[in-house]
Image 1 (cartoon, rainbow, N blue to C red):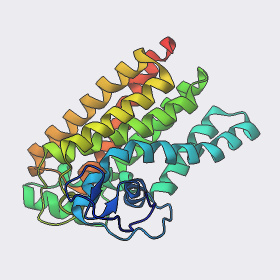
Image 2: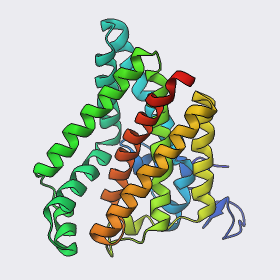
Image 3: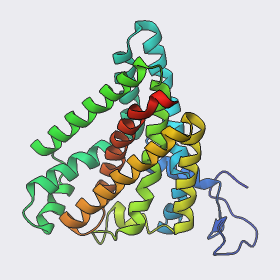
Image 4: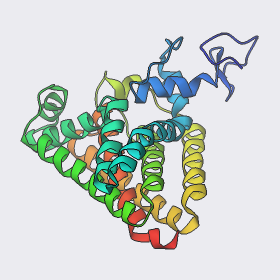
Length: 273
């Protein structure tokens, strides 16, 4: 198969492997464009059906991004022998690689949910590019907790594993929310990304679980799965209550909250690795 949005010869339109003559191998690169700022060439078809199909490889994108972030983080840790420096550089690298899109979603949700009096006003605030008090507090607490959990894992020699697990598991649950919640707007990423088919969602979840299992073993994997499910259920319930559905900001915030829940679950059980 081709690695770009090239054609395939007489493909079935509803096949799991091709949609509109676009090879499935391009899903990874399409997802990489959607979820990061890593430059990808020759991927310019972002129809909702293709974005929705790409969700199966979102955990793989997380693994890829975390792997890149580990390079400067490990170098910084080697030069300074500091777990705190490792954690800060790792988080900074991921923020740069993603363009802080997930952090932006968290801040927008915090501002909208906390500052709006009705659904319309909440959505209006979430679309405002300015950041408010709720957003600042949410970002500070989230970044601080991510760094603290990575430092705690580093004390046990598990920081590298935790960074990979956080990145994989948190990106495996976002498509679940895309499928169970309707878009709260008639436009925006939550609407334009389309609604994934359950077979693609469950394939992504299975890939995420398999990667976490291989990295950390069955006990930690079970803890991570429960934590990720709780984070998704929490964010889904809050989003339905506040705005009646999901948006791109809600998906970004879900990724951030899932990272924190997963990291807490991982740290709580990492003695069993």
